[in-house]
Structures are given as structure tokens and as C-alpha cells.
Amino acid sequence: MDLNSVDLESSRERAAVTKAAEARAEEGADVTLLLSLPKGEKAVHKFKTGVTVAYVKALVAEQHQLEFSKMKLLLGGRLLIDPLSLSDCPGIVPGQEVAVEVSVG
Image 1 (cartoon, helix red, strand yellow):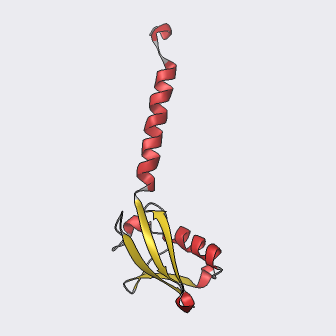
Image 2 (cartoon, helix red, strand yellow):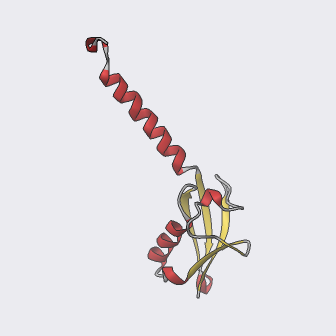
Image 3 (cartoon, one colour):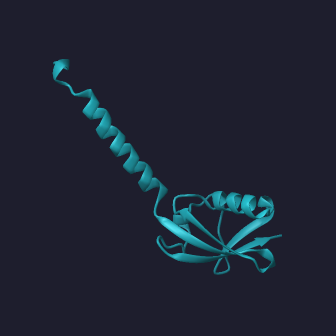
């Protein structure tokens, strides 16, 4: 193979574009969670459907001073399980607003 005819820069650029597209696909589409927090408070947060339920809980715990270890997220009365991504949870629809109850205790 004649290395003088190989265009390494173009190969790198194509690989970077492909890698970026794969990362976007992994992140998923946006979903807006309408959170009913303890004590009747409401909050709205937008997430990528590729993030885990645990990630959502961590962000909510941090931003709303709630205890992560006692927090539960419920969608239509059904528990959202930590290791699942939002895209794996029935009722989470990309591009939609989804009502989620936040319970602590």
C-alpha cells in the first residue's frame, strides 16, 4: 500500500463525525419531566432519554435538597428503577412532558 495516497486527515474527520453521531444516539432525545416534589412543590427538568433514573434522582436531590438514598420516582404510581435509562421506562415518551412524582421516605 502506498502511504503517500492515504488521506489521514479526512479519515480522522470522518471518524470524529461518526463518533459524535453515535454519542448523540446514545444520549437519546429530550424528555421533560414535570416533577411533583414533596410538600406540594413543582419543578420542571429536561433530560436526555439515555440518562439513568439514578442520574435524574441525583440531580433532583442536589437541586432540591432531598435525600438521594430515600428518594423514589413514580410514574403513574409505578416505581422507576435506578439502573434503567429513561428510555427503558414505560410511559417516558421522547419529546413529551411526563408527570413524575418524587417521594422521600
